[in-house]
Each structure stands twice: as C-alpha cells, then as structure tokens.
Image (cartoon, rainbow, N blue to C red; front, side, top):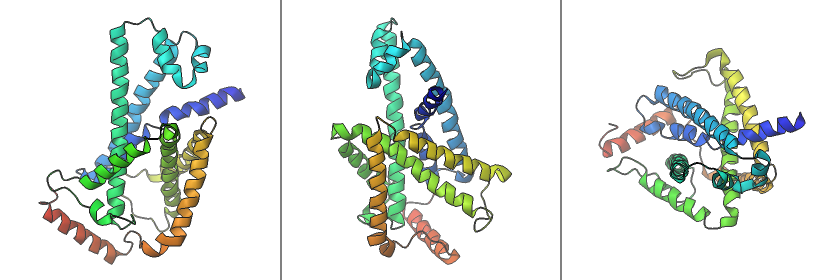
Length: 285
C-alpha cells in the first residue's frame, strides 16, 4: 500500500510539464481579445487536453512495454528501450517519435512565450535591474516584445550548453513554476474577502477559496515530489535559489524596485503610459 501511494505521487510528475500551456495562456493575455473571459478558457482547455492526451500516451507507453519491470529498470532510457523492443512497423515508430518531438517543441515554445512575456512585463514595471528600457520595447511590425523574446531564447540556449546540468535545470524550472504559482494563490486566498473584494467575469464564487487551498496543497506536493531522488540536486537549486532571491531583495531590490502601481492614481498613470505606447504602435487593434 505505501508503495502504491508513492507510485501515485511520483506519477503526478507526468503532469508537471503540461503547465507551460496553462502558463502561456496567462502571459499572452495582453495580446488576447476579451482577455478577461478568453484567457481563463484557454487555461482550462490547456489543462484538459493535456490530461486527456497525456493519460492516453502514458497508458499506451506502459501497455507497449514487454515487461514493466524491465522497462522501469531502464530509467531515463525506458522510452528508447520500449521502442526498440516494439514489433510495430518502422514507419509507425518514426511517426510516433516525430509526433513526440513536435509536441515537446510546442511545449518548449509555450515555455519561451511565458518567459518572454514575463521578462517584458517585469521590464515595463521596472522589475528587471538591467536593460529594462530595451526589453520593454514592442516591435511595431510584429506587435510583440521582440527584444524580450530573443533574450529569452538566447538565455535558454546558453542554459543547455552544460549538458550535465540540463536535467537539473529542466526539472528545476518546473519546480520553480509551482513555487511561483503557490505564492500568489496563497496571497489571494488570504486577501479574498478582505483587501480583495472585486473580481473579474471569471468567478468561482463560493468555491474560490476551496479551489485556491487545494491548488496551494497541490503545488506543495508537486514541489516535494520534484526534489526526490534522483532529482535531489533540484532541491539544492531550489533552496539556494530562494536564498539568493531573499539576499538580492533585501540588499538591492527592496530600495530600487517600487513595485506595481497600487493606488488608483498610479494605476491611471500607468494606463495612460500604456495607451501612449499603443498609440505609437498604431493603436491596440
């Protein structure tokens, strides 16, 4: 029984990386028409279809193994071992592998979208210590934050140059994503009904706090699972990353970064600034 529970929890890792589609939906909200309604729909669709196709793929993969015990013993090589053992036609194998590569490419593309939009948004609000002026610029031709996109792409390539660190970095990115989700969801859970009283058109009503609470618990479970052996180095990365962020915040950023606009006057000023920038690009069209 304990082994079954452990296997179930480890199985949750299959869903960790699907969050990139969910994440990208939120970060492209400024480029989405009727974002207050369409972005939540996009998030729900990304999670739903990831769950459906991911479950089908995992079931197919396990059923295709000649021996689950032997397959599990292969570790990271379980997939190529299973494909080599399979008696399916070579053409079908190639189609399947190409489909998986394309899916991974789209997943990485969604991750790049999230990264570039975050880099752009933080630069616009002064949250990036260096090169904020360049990173916040929007291409007039493509109406996208081109500098932030290219910077994110280059940094992503640099991060893969040291091959031994690739697994730690890729898993660490997923773990840090869940930490970044748990923080604002937890803050919203505490603020709802107190300082946060006005919601948008996508409102869960009375279920809001329950969903938020379960989401925070889910994030914590996934973070714990994500740092278990053989990914214990991810735990070290998480720990020292949080320590570095705390030190940088109290040593430098707390004095430099003013934070997002909170007062009504500051919000109006920021909206006017964004409207001027949109006008220079030819309107919000």
